[in-house]
Length: 152
Image (cartoon, rainbow, N blue to C red; front, side, top):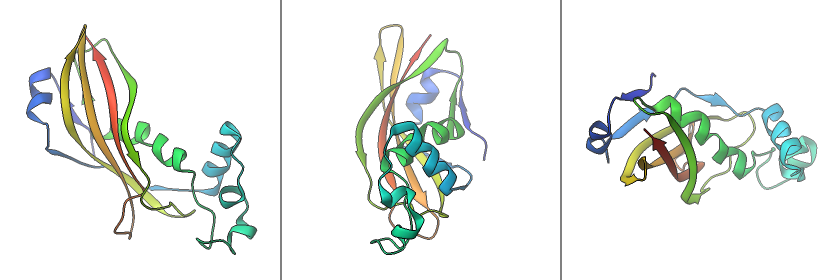
């Protein structure tokens, strides 16, 4: 899927509430989980010890919730692209939930929609709801209202 391109602020405002589609699937590998553990210092066994995790509540290792959330930064640019700006920055999240763990070997993808657009000094702010789905699961891994600021 290619990103939906927005050429101006009016197009973005018109897209509030309209689904942006979905990204390609991404496999959650143990290597990615281990790299995240190394980067953050979170080496809890449920994430990094496959043998011990076999006996745990999920039967295998699972991705860190914050690893799953961080993939919103990978998925969002695959869903939308804003043109005519000098820069865009991650400003934060309004709400984040992790309804379902991502087991190693699972495939995940992002879907999204723009939920709010407001003016800011020198640009605008956009809230996009990113839902990270797990292939074959009814509940998503993560639902995050991400906040981005775009400057002209």
